[in-house]
Amino acid sequence: MKIISDIEELRDQLSGQLRTAFVPTMGNLHEGHLSLMRLAKRHGDPVVASIFVNRLQFGPNEDFDKYPRTFQADVDKLEKEGVYVLFAPTEKDMYPEPQEFRIQPPEDLGGTLEGKFRPGFFNGVCTVVLKLISCVQPRVAVFGKKDYQQLMIVRNMCRQLALPTQIIAAETRRADDGLALSSRNVYLTPQERAEAPMLFKVLNEVASEVRAGHLDIFKLEKHAVHKLKKRGWEPDYISIRRQFDLQPPMAGDLAKNTPLVVLAAAKLGSTRLIDNLEI
Ligand code: PAF
Image (cartoon, rainbow, N blue to C red):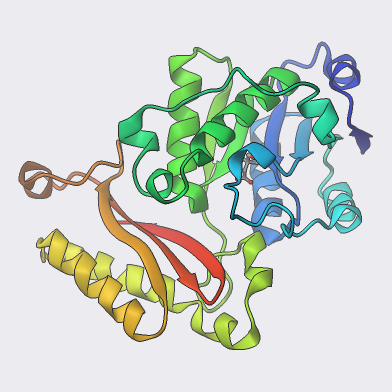
């Protein structure tokens, strides 16, 4: 595997490659990321991964400085997956000057859910993803459903800006007890780790109620938030939305069985976890 930090060198290395499959990451790779690499391999060749902890998508009080960085272990894992190039730019490579041109997603998609609780987050994500895609020029790029809203926003960005990159969605990988794999799980204490699967359990309960025809969405969301709060969580939201645009369902959607998704973000101790479940 070639490890490249310089954008020009990356372009030289990939020139003439028409079927590149790309997986952008922020490192601290776990089985979830590796499943994205395997999916990428099924959709293209060569596979290019990136590791870049993108300062632009972290708020001033978020965990940019303490975000887990495990470069050598990540390299070993990517080697084993047969990744062809690892693009690992430094901050100077990626942002040699202040990044003044930015991508601002539309408010209805980017200002809700995560966007409401993490102002600037999707602006930072879209800006770096567009820049990474511009560097790698992949035919496909793989994003996990774990970050459901990010996946939707990136997909819409690529479509609206007519980027020649198809976005592929990968299913969320979970531990045996249901906890979605995430780089931030390393922050959990043993007690918190034991409690953490409750988030997915609550999502399953909400989904079962909806499937059983309980359509008082507001009541279901409120009940789920209350349940987590009673156990010591601090939920930001538990929200039932339409899959196609992440807006709250209208009465007509419920009658028509429009595909829904329930999304959640909640703090457990000092760790903020997100998860979702398609209904
Ligand atoms: O999902 C992530 O790890 C990041 O948001 C991404 C897509 C690599 C952009 O920094």
